[in-house]
Image 1 (cartoon, rainbow, N blue to C red):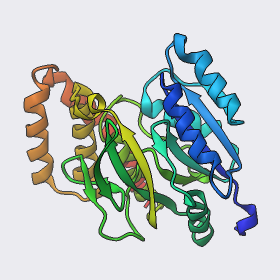
Image 2 (spheres, helix red, strand yellow; image 1 turned 120 degrees about the horizontal axis):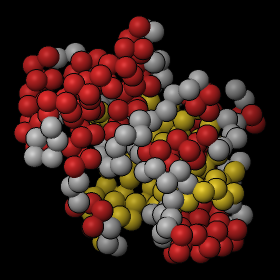
Image 3 (spheres, one colour; image 1 turned 90 degrees about the horizontal axis):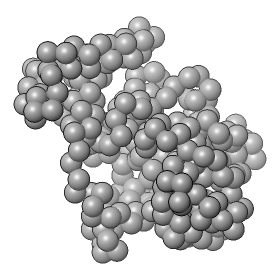
Image 4 (tube, helix red, strand yellow; image 1 turned 135 degrees about the horizontal axis):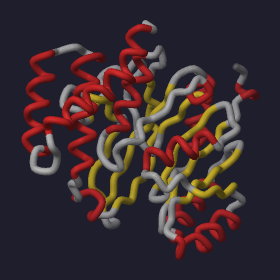
Length: 283
């Protein structure tokens, strides 16, 4: 693919935060090079819809209603609404530093078939928290671990990843079962098993302005997603039955307070098997 043939779509998710969205889009439209399109998928409550639409119109973006089925369902929904050759995820609490989109396009031109991720400067309630130079990838525990090979990994930066459109055209989707947690990392591992590799854009990062309420919450769905992702990792990506049993026991101890494990564990094992056995048979 020639650089002139690359069309970068931005799949931007928003919910109930018009001020944050406006700040995000201001940084995007200040870039020295602009994307092919910006699609804003709005999962807001009804009272925020008009304000979000006004911000989208102000910055010449295409507005669509969100899926209203959670974050990861909305990721899929927004991506499928894009028309570019490549789809870059983005959230309304992000700010792009100057030159960021140029870095993205330069990376795509090097390897158009790769999934590209960036690093992050994290802020909580406006105060600097930490700098992460590269994205995380799925680990045996079902959580993220730092990437050691920037040019061949299964990393995903949930709100700052570039996917070739081919991935969605071939029917691959992030799982939508969990509203919160690290299940987005499973998508990177799943794609890796299906022949797509992730690469890191050297020196590229976004500024992420999170809220402490979001960072510190620990809903049941977070532990569910970790158990699911851990099973995927230990039974299929890097098979290790000892670690599978270890993390199954660990997460089941917590989830047993909220779930009937007699039915829940067989159900989640069936979900993993249904999705991942297709990957292993295609290798």
